[in-house]
Length: 360
Image 1 (cartoon, rainbow, N blue to C red):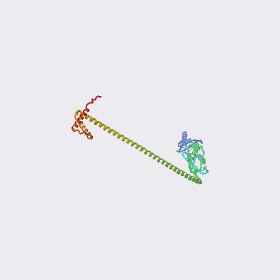
Image 2 (cartoon, rainbow, N blue to C red):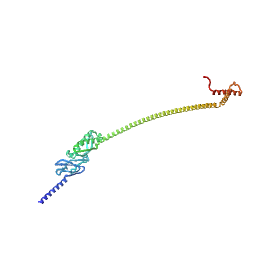
Image 3 (cartoon, rainbow, N blue to C red):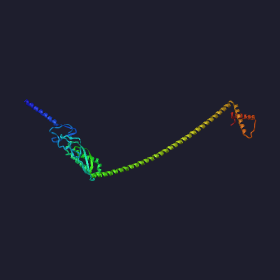
Image 4 (tube, rainbow, N blue to C red):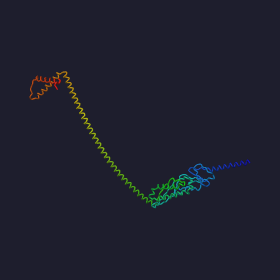
């Protein structure tokens, strides 16, 4: 009985261990970085496992591994590359869609060869697997349709310069179409644009003519610019000469003005100095005369007889000079003349020092 109980417990433990091992093996999912796995529960899409450790329910949840239909084309559509592994890991990295080179007709019925490349990544694995069937083929079809419409509006000469507009228009159309597929279009590039040999020759001739026309336009523009520069230089030279003449006239006028000012100032200073000299001389003369009168008054006050005698001698000298110049002069003895002169001098001195008593 005890052995039967021990055997049942051991079996239970072994069963639990087995379940645990199975759960670890099938329930624990480690998703590599840059990958994703789709989980189906009871045959229906359930969730997406992102990079890292994830848990699922064994035998109820299963990793979708087959029938994913996720691939792209490389090397002008000659190589098909799957975007998933055998374990069901779906790549989330950026991928390149390089379909075969397209042969399209332009507006002028010329055959144009275009190689378009699209860069994309899977943003929602559930939509990419369940919402679209063979999304790579769908992308190729949209690229062909869009480029056929865009190139059909352009001629062979214009399509060469419309590379960027073609790329941008194609990217917008692809993004609008693939947004419901869980695909994100990153960029689109037109790698190559080619033509038939006949069209290439026509384009070469047209290009040569265009280059000649542009060269002529550049030469004409350079000549016109040279004429404008020459005219500007001549105008500048005339302006500089006029400004130089104006400055010279102004400088000459300023010099003449300064010369007149200096002459006027010199004449003024000269007149001023002459007036000051005359004034000084007159002042000195008046001062000398005043000092003479003062000395005479002082002499008269101190020695009147000497002054009278001096004046008498002066009178005799004047009388002698008058007699010498007169034809009817009368010779008077020296003593008598001296007596007369002394008397006259005495009278003159007396009058000059005596007060005026004449009634008024």
